[in-house]
Each structure stands twice: as C-alpha cells, then as structure tokens.
Length: 319
Image 1 (cartoon, rainbow, N blue to C red):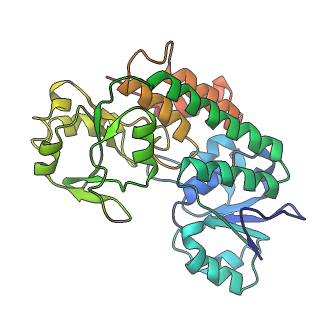
Image 2: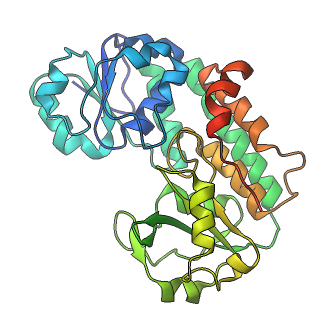
C-alpha cells in the first residue's frame, strides 16, 4: 500500500488527497503534471499566507472541498481516496494511520535539489507520464548549469538569509534549500554551522553584527517581502551592517509562494539570487521574463493569465 521512490505503478490514481505539513510543496509539484489535476479531491491548507495559487492553475481547485491541515486519518478516509500523497516526514504519523486503514499512500521528500529529481521521476511513474518528469528535471538541470557557469570564479559575497519572526529574526538549518541556494548562487552563507536544530533558529543582534554580511536576504511567507525587507533595513539590529549601508537588504523573490523554499519555484529563486549576488553575470536576465517561462512550462499559464494572476503578486527586487 505504500508507494516508494523506486516503485512501478500498475494503475494511475484517480482519487488523490494531499494534506499535512508542507502540503503546498507537495501540491505544487503534483499540479505540474496536467494529467493529475482532475484526479485531486482535496488539498489541505494550500495557502501559505499570500493566497491560493492553485486556483490560477486549475479553476476547479477553487471548488474543491476543504481539508483541515491538522486533520486526522478519518478525515482523509472520508474522501475514499485511492492515493494520499504526503511529505515523507509524515510517514510515521499520519502515514502510518492511513496505511493501517488500508489506504494507499505515497511520500515525497522535496527537501534538496536531488530530492526534486527523484520525486519528479517518481511522480512521472505514478501518473504514467515519465516524459513530463524528464521535461521538468531538464529545466532544473539547465537552470543549475546556467547559474554555475555564470558565477564560477567570481568573488563570493557573504550572505545572511533571515526570516522575520515576531520582533526578531531566524536562520535556517544548514541542510535546508535556503542554504543550498545561497551556495549554488555563488554566495557564502554566514550562518552555516550556527543553526544546529531541525528548523528555523532565532538569531541575536550581536551575532548579526558579528557576521556583518555583504547581503541580507529577508524571507516572508505571509507578507510582501520587499516591505518586510524595508523595515528590516531600518532595524537597529541591522542598520549598522555592511549590507544595510550598501542598500543590500533585499526581500527574497516571491509570488504566491516565496522562491527560497523547497517548492517547484526553487529554480526561479536560484536564478534571481545569482543575479542579486552577481549583477551582470547573467546577461539579459529579467526576473519577470524568467517567471513567465517557468509558469508556462510548469502550469501552462499563458501571458494573459500570468498578467492577471501572477504579475500583481510578483516581488523580484534586486539591488
């Protein structure tokens, strides 16, 4: 009943439920397979704080019944799914309960660049569309190679990525996508080694001052990132840093979803970040143009739909 990364599928699922922690990342990658969209019965909690993106991909999404993000296994079972897709971190909890009920369950890791390659190939087999999986993997490979070529040999700026939280700031763990993106984009993540837990960790004013980064990236998942960055640049804990003095306190690019996280948008985030850290090394780079290309490839969103749904939410400030 449990679908693993190497499994072959005898039958394409027709009644799909997605829920639980980080379901947005799961749903976004599933919806990148057009043939799967009509099979989705519900997605539990698909708004991270900036709106429901999937309604722009499939109008039918807006009419789906709701599933609470904290729902128990009985709520999943009530939909009579033939496949529940979850983050792999839920395998021992929600997943175990679903499996005990005899419900077919699949898990996506979606944490690292390599995870995306593996999980896309897995979904390609599940949905009987391995060609689509190869097309999406090829996009990430092309973007990664393009950025690597652009930043190779350039001096690496010292970068601090923070999330505003309450009246303070937090840093991500070493193994998270945020750290990888900074490194892939040709930067040095100054916080590496300082966050020893498994989630966002609070960072004090003294530590920010001691790091004195060249660039500060401000992440926000529920507010416009450029506005949050503007407030951060005026914060007494940040205003004396080299980044603030050079006008390099920058809100991380976002639309409905911030581009820093292990969502399908991480390739966009990598391109944008490389341009921020190494201006001019990606000749002709235009974040809006890149976003149009991405949303057309992943979700068949044409220019008219992009201008209506995506462009008003786009935050792609640079230096």
